[in-house]
Length: 312
Image (cartoon, rainbow, N blue to C red):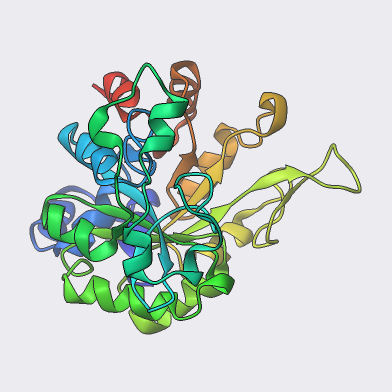
């Protein structure tokens, strides 16, 4: 498929010498973006959310100032059809409101304070300017950073956000984020990714997975939505099935009490089948170092400053 063919070809060693130079010289911004997924990516999870209120302009400003590779965000849709940047299904945890986010209009959401909670929870990082931070629209984020940033967007809870994929793709196209190589779209829901693909076949997609112990046998890991077998059982055909529509995999690194769920062999096998592996959400330096040694192609982190020091 067009979206991942360049990465897969390079992984299999099909380009070499002058042919590689010619291909890269003639590549489009979208092809260059996919090629760059081979190198290590620093992904600011909900912005620099370890230092500022998650998913707010302050968090994204800080991450952008540090020159991360991607600003990560969750897209949801309001009662009046606006695409907003917000993680939880409910607004209670990170605002002074309560209830489901998609029960509110954009105007109603703009009246909420999504910064004071951070100051209360993080006295050592509190800043007066965080208080009163507003929920962002995707338009506002694009208008602020434009093509000076890349965006890693999750279609959040698609079953609770009908029409999200259509609204998201429309916005991406309006800001020319696809052909300019500025965006990746991720989701745990394969159906949501396939819907995005139907709407615009050029949008690079990332299949998110979550591995955890089976209820029937805790020694056996399974994937939350069943999109792949567990890490001990996954094979080339399973990775190739994902590569039919996706340009990469986003996976958890560990679960409860630090049990690791992937290893270097998982990453190697995914790469050999044309899929870079981005791991979430990694905040401790020792875990960052371990995953980099294992060959991870990128990490989601709330502390991109820590990761950038290791990359440098």
